[in-house]
Length: 403
Ligand SMILES: *Cc1c(COP(=O)(O)O)cnc(C)c1O
Image: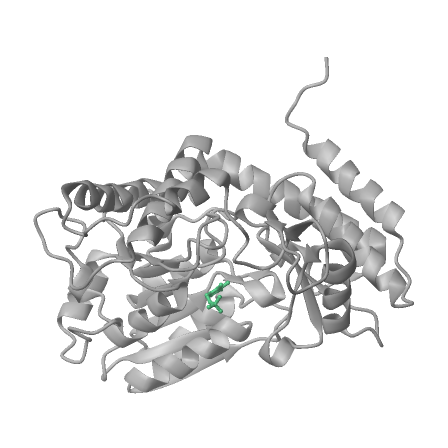
């Protein structure tokens, strides 16, 4: 969470607390890994490190298939999924509950015969029943795309319910789990998900330079049968299918330092244990939500049951500009919060609790910086009540038994 001293541009002295919607910082072990020598990719040490990274990702995903590592930020994985999987005869059902879902439709339209959408307001989730109805109305749908956690809105779509509906229809399922993996239970196999994209820079606490992909056998088959699937291209997934095998060449030089970082993140994730990582995110999220409400703010999500444990999105009081609050919190408290983009710009503010910022006192620091900024701007904010509420939520979760 602490990004270190930054005196150059902001004028603010002291540590910067990164409590944004990501990238959310990295641990000392991850940063140390990035600092290792940049090896030749065919150095046997690197070949084995790469193979081992893919294997650790497989263990983290709990899948039988070995995940694919694409050499660019998570968006590369999402765009590559559309380019590779969606054939020109596919009809895509795109589920839209926020900015990332909306954006996926634009990619899908580039490749599909037709894209239809189920869209709900950006403070809501797509009900599985709506997916069932849309598929019943259009038996020709062959691919469904959905965002698990809509990060800017801090909301979740219920993949445990949507996955089986899509499987019943025999359609392929593309999932953006970039920010949810680590903060929400993700069972790609039980969902019947065919192509899932995860970002190392969110709840895994890594750098923003790689995309991790779960690809099912059915997805490989569909891609292989797609005459338009990119080859010899940055967008190609097929080119990287066997890159984790030490005897196979890389299509091009992998992002060596980012691979070290991802390896370190996955080692830490597995050593801590998926259940403990989830619990840490849930606990920080509960503290952030309770504290924000006690501060006098409203959750952006229309219903608490769809709130994400990776990020808390908040509605600001009328007349308060989110950009001004963010600038204030950064300048006077060294607290870096994040705000809305696109349709949500100026309307929503986020407190991230992801990876290294998903620890007990992170939300307390975030709420203090946020509350202080609101007060300086003349808005009402009960900082004391917010801290009390956050600590009470943490106490209720306290894993240390009292003697
Ligand atoms: C972070 C994130 C991505 C990656 O996109 P950027 O805008 O480049 O950060 C994709 N999908 C979701 C849901 C994300 O949270």
